[in-house]
Amino acid sequence: MKNVIHIINLIHYTKSIGMKSFALCFLIYLFVFNSSFGQVRIGITSGTGLSRITIKDERVFGEVGSDYYSSNATTRNSWTYYGGLMAAFKVSNALEFRTKLLANSKSWKERAVYKISSSAAGSNPKDSTASQRTYRISYLELPMNLIFLSPLGKSKVLFGVGPYISYALGGKFKMDIEHTIMANSTDSLAFINFTSEEIRGTAYKGNRFDFGASIVAGIELRNGVVFDLNYTVGTKDILQDRYFVFPNRWRVFTVGIGYFFYNGTKNKSNF
Image 1 (tube, helix red, strand yellow):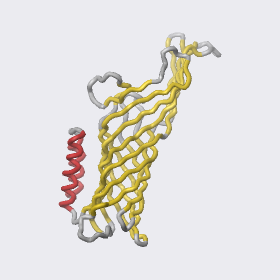
Image 2 (cartoon, helix red, strand yellow):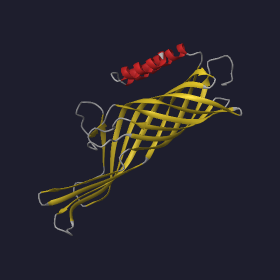
Image 3 (tube, one colour):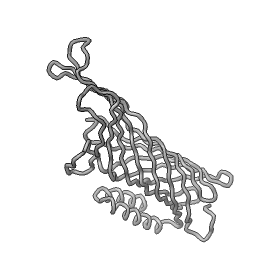
Image 4 (cartoon, helix red, strand yellow):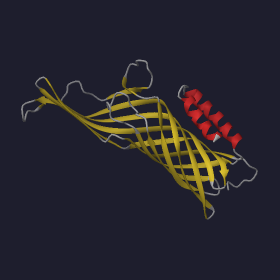
């Protein structure tokens, strides 16, 4: 119960700190758990996969004076990748608490079509543009999973669940024009702003913190190499001013590999 309280306090405290303190908080957090459990293992990890948001299609229609406008956007998956440190705290032979400190890049793509035409039926569009848009955000991420282990020959299979918290380091919005009859429509690159300040070149404002839950499954070899699959579900909106009242939250699937180079005991075996 004491360790659950440590996690809750960490999440609460991180809401009010910056990126540098986030990393320091992680080190303190490792020390606390190392003091609470009998054995800690430390390693490195990296992986890649696909990320998307909860919105799949967005359609907006309306009239302005004698003109009729329509906007149609469809989102799709994009690449995500990560790398960083991982630590495992032994609870029993069949149970561990595992956490990671990751530099994580997540993104999604969007194809948008915007048209303005006369309200008269069959009229040609006055303005029309089609574009491919990419949203990419870099995070410092801290997943926290309770891992169940089961022997499989000389290896162990693992399954775990738990929360995660992410701190946005920065983001970019890129628009590539596919087709346009608008005179001023060109390719563009802008920032996603995570501060309360007005920054020149900002396309959208984003939420600095992201929270959610993750499910992990995989296999760990006797030499400390880990292969895992991870699916995360975000519970907080990513952008504040892009999708109006519609939830826009992360859905991420990754494949990763890791290696425990330190197992905290004189015994060289990871098991």
